[in-house]
Image (tube, rainbow, N blue to C red; front, side):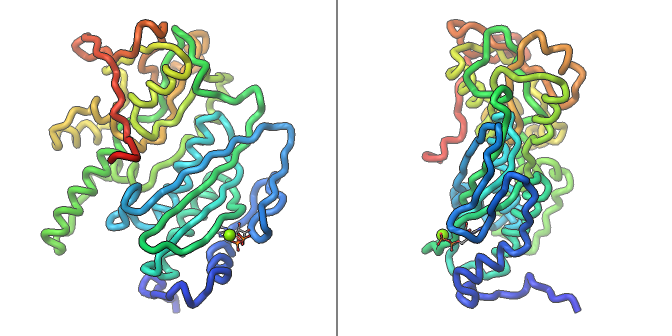
Length: 348
Ligand code: ADP
Ligand code: MG
């Protein structure tokens, strides 16, 4: 008989800290050649070959970065990995290892952490990264997850934020604004549910935007695509806070300006229809919504023929001299300065 684990509530104290670590990590497999030693010793050991290493970390806090009332733990585990890998790919690097640290209150049974780890495992398999360590501790309330991702890249292939040049094309992958709108739909359904718990929402028409919020992907494919196309961006950043704040980072660090064309910003039809329903402007959402995890890059004009036919890459503007400033050219062809609302993690 297949046991239905979702109904079980094994207290974490039944396992103890070491039992818990063993239990959660026992299925994780080593896939990378550079992983010399994974979980089990005082530290993981990663082989350094001729490449350079990139390392990045993110901390996710319950109630600040995620809400478990609509975020299934499996998705949370998956997303926690994705947000870190996205930063590795934004350096034009290949992600190879992650570490996973968690703090949990006794509100969570073992089965909840198994769900979290099944999402982490799925992401680590799909993205071909090894889980090589972490830390496990208790918290007084709520759940914290901190993931660190490690990647490798040939020295000549690394792309920073600070080498965009005037006249470079501004290029974005995928489409924008969907994850933020997905969150708005989920928040609305949560309020409806509070009033009437029997109400089963029909979310079919929002499937894409909800998936972009709950199960985002990182653009590993773009790192490979750029290599295949023999294009090295002059600068690159991942879009975690919204297009306008990422453009401002690129411009400030590269000491350039930018003209961004409103009519070029790629939007999914579901974003357009949901914006109409919510009576919000889709450009505002693309500029200021967060969590798209697409890549924003600048490329030299010379490389335009290599990218122009590619459906993954959209030219949305070009870089200018720093003195010209940063502007959005609207559909009505007026020029307005770009300001970042972004997502200020410390104030919202
Ligand atoms: P230490 O006391 O040296 O910090 P731990 O007992 O915390 O060691 O961890 C034992 C091993 O398990 C280490 O390899 C550590 O990296 C790994 N580990 C601990 N917690 C986790 C976790 N949540 N996920 C993955 N690996 C973990
Ligand atoms: Mg430890």
